[in-house]
Length: 201
Image 1 (tube, helix red, strand yellow):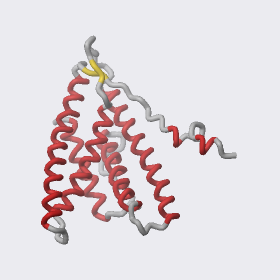
Image 2 (cartoon, one colour):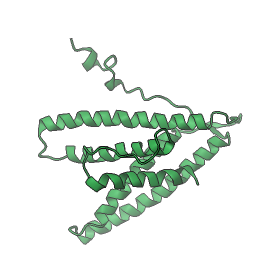
Image 3 (cartoon, helix red, strand yellow):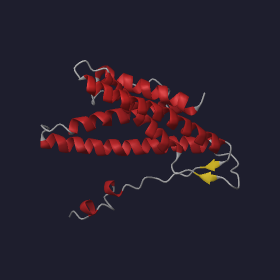
């Protein structure tokens, strides 16, 4: 079984579990053993799923400005949590392949495995919600047909991205590629680098 064959069903399970109650404030109930890669993949997608719905809510034109600001803070926190989880998953890959002998002609990829997995997690959400649109009973035939075309593209993208991720991991395992992890240095979150924050007296 490839990595994405393990990961994608976990993403689907997380999305399904979230939509039992469909509430951004519901607590996570992770079914996997703490410390396993499955555990972190489930958390990763749960964060993505909650944030997906945050983004829906904040686009409500009638949202109270104070509530919108509070929600913006929650989105910022969610983004940081997402980044932290990606870096944790990359640490898993670094540990797993730390003893691989890197070939002299090995190359580096444009992104680390975990950032590609991040894209796959979000793609699972796009597929779920586009399927919802296809299944709507209150939508026009034109809307459903348009969404069906988009869903077909997303499913093809899921197949291609999964294949690319598995190939990247195989190349790392064989020493044909190597990986580096560049920590996300988000300056706007740091009171010492955001001039709005460090300028406050």
